[in-house]
Image 1 (tube, helix red, strand yellow):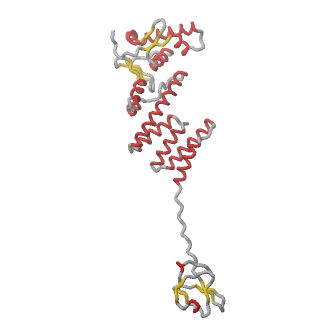
Image 2 (tube, helix red, strand yellow; image 1 turned 135 degrees about the vertical axis):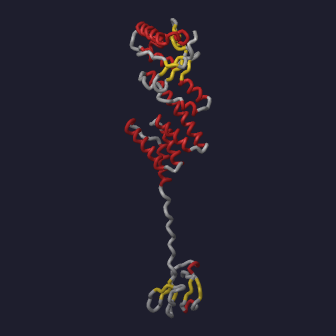
Image 3 (cartoon, helix red, strand yellow; image 1 turned 120 degrees about the vertical axis):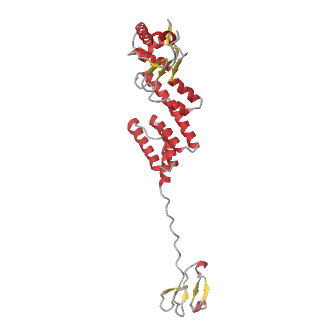
Length: 304
């Protein structure tokens, strides 16, 4: 008897639909077993399942507990159990035929190169209400896959000129992996490229605090170098100082031994003045009014 497809959502709270209608979930271990089966549809050896859910119990006791839990799951599925549940002497599980799981759909869309559609399925944390070791491990593996997908999304958006989408994907990636230096570096580079260097440096400071306070480690050299380069680019360029003009050549009055500036606009020197032995460039050629200079001739002051 066909009862319709079985749909299971693992993102957020666990929900089950049978033929498009919500199905009341079993309680306790039966609920956990259903979620575990949905992670990997198909048959599983009874010994493996019993060891996963009752690791501290003797094998016979664990198998007995598994039989009781499978019976509770069968009761919750009702008539659909014959079509969707695998339960023979050696194996238990969910049949993949007529079964849809949002996690499996996420993986399919990601493999097909449709990251936006895949990310749209992540409406919450995977198995958010489960804290067993197998659920924690599944969440960690999924986070790695999502982070890689967000990295691809951010790179593609950045190359396409969609900076806003690239920043959103990079920020989501870092929120998902708050200790990942590569995720922080990617967000810092995008923020710096957008002109928001203070925000880029704030991302760096936040990661440093988390690493030092929560993990007791320091940042890697590559991230530190990136922060230095952003900080250096944020400093204003130094104002170039004007090159000081050299002093004009001076002539000395032989009688008073007092210097008088030569050149246009200056008073002519007294008779008997002679040019100073100071060196000067030809660019500072000035009319020299000293008789020794020829009286009004223009020449460059020169050294001895």
